[in-house]
Length: 119
Figure 1 (cartoon, rainbow, N blue to C red):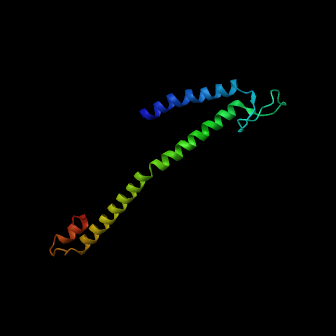
Figure 2: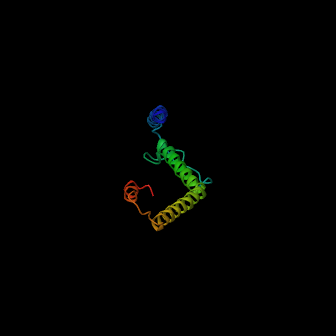
Figure 3: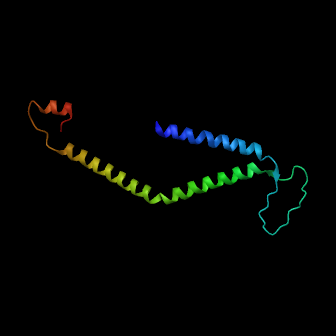
């Protein structure tokens, strides 16, 4: 419950800030990946992309790269989890097979024990 409240307290102002930022930065900027190229100081109308789109794309790329880095960093933990899960499954199946191969006690309470799964 607290996580949801904190999430809303952080998420709503952040989204509002992004909307205000997008509305305030609608002017076009030139995009160039060559640092040595000169950019024409007076580009034609419609040239470039809005600045907020550039920043949103950079933010999205950063989030994706961070997620990928985290995925690779946690690979060792996932591998260990998979190993221990397989080990637990193997031990549970071995325990069940040992329980089935045990000699069933003869007597009037054997049926009750089987019904209640006491053995």
